[in-house]
Length: 122
Length: 252
Image (cartoon, rainbow over all chains, first blue to last red; front, side, top):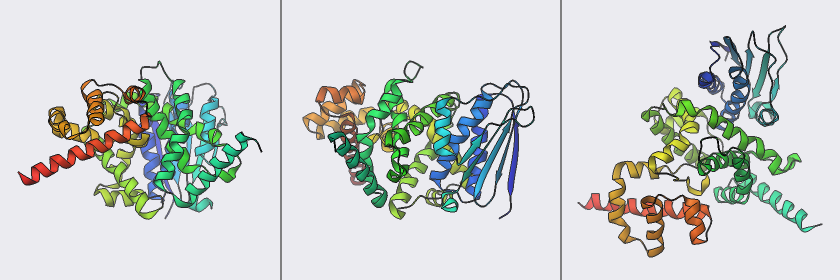
């Protein structure tokens, strides 16, 4: 199975978070994630993407990429201040994502996260 | 070793047994045992426009996920591990309030079927199902299953409200797949006609729940039993009432 990639540009509207979740869960299904793994992925997406959508003032770009073992999600929010994650958001991400960071991409606030299939990580 | 240490050791041992057996009864016991943590965290989200009972239901869903995933060998306490799942579930709920009001009925119905199918597949295979398995089991497409899974999170509370205020999931684990459907199809009048078949305590519970529309917690307090116990009793009662309905229609 080849690489699958989707890029979504959405306005800074938290109600659009669902679209990103569905895209993420759809890609994860394609590469064989279980229901349990998708549940974790969705919780992680919720935390990171909402951090963008709740504070961004311009269009936000979310790219999702899946290969046979993982789903990687990156978000960029030009024009907004640094992404800030609260302690609770970090705790949720610690438990549900395999990797995440909120390093800026140049001067653009960005995040990335990776969720690996349990069977692939084992 | 202190008595507190013993409690922790017993708890870890119970989690070990659950990880090995995946026994649903044991899982439910663990959930009940740690329900206080979910309630405590739910209290922190009170006064934000969602009833505390509903918040607690959402928190318990997060607790169930944590129980299912907790590895006692990881060296962290269950409370530390569970907190993000419980809080994450509640945060997710608040973010979705706008969407959940608009969830089409067909998707809500699919969500109910998908939840049941996931449980059946878990029980049958003893392993976590894939979305394709759920699609086959429910005769839905993969996209429909994903949409239903997403909606299931959002509609959990709303479905209970449609069934009647405060209807809680059986054993605090899953929305009562049969309660809303039963009420939609048969209606409260039918319940009234059938309650004569129940004993006094069961009648009192049904009356308090569906006529007085009191919360399960409230009923539990009055009867001196746990809310989980009330939830179980209601589920059993409804199952029996449904049998009567089915028998009646088959013999009619």
